[in-house]
Length: 274
Image 1 (cartoon, helix red, strand yellow):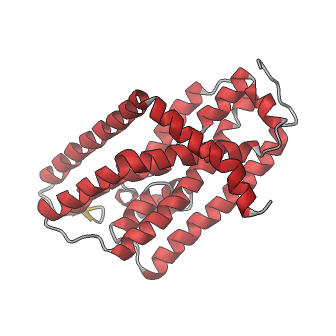
Image 2: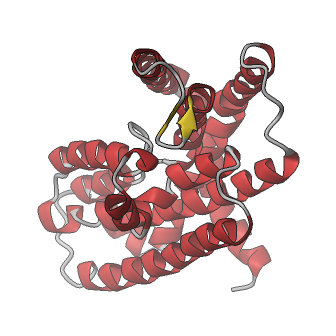
């Protein structure tokens, strides 16, 4: 399949997801507000931590950098950390997965492009405005210079890779539904674990060096932590190249892993509805 035909086949899944988000704006806005409220809590929490420590540098980050870290984590998470395991679980529970499998399309690609659509909607609606707010706050309140176009370019590149990693990982996670049918409890566990391992709650630099090395060689650090640290300019030169290469490797590994699991689950598919 050539690229033109490929995008003509699967891009409608992304555009339809954008239309669905626009149709159910209330639900989307509620999710955005809850996430932003969580970021505000983190902001005041870290302000208190730095205040009690007398300012300075903690975990390699100044209080100003931590403020930017908190809100850029929100931007990155909103755009890149798009959950698609619910789509897979819903299709399994409702039995619609059987209908999707007999269509002349790649089911996995259709799910991933739905995730792209949701990500694009989040980018257009809240993420850009929050990023602009971060830069205004950086300039007017923190009196810090703009991060720089080079850092911004590599941040965007890293965030795209982060999105691919998260979508591929979440698809693999969603395939558990083929074995257990219902994965709501596991979804709650996944959300909590990822919030911790991706650096959303606590920057990975706050952990001991040995723990950091373990976290850095997992795919989770490439989902949120790596793009935000690139934005802050903490990765430069060869270290930046290594971080991006590691993200590319995880994209490949998760794609291959998903393919292997997908071949197995389609051989034991049990449809409950349809």
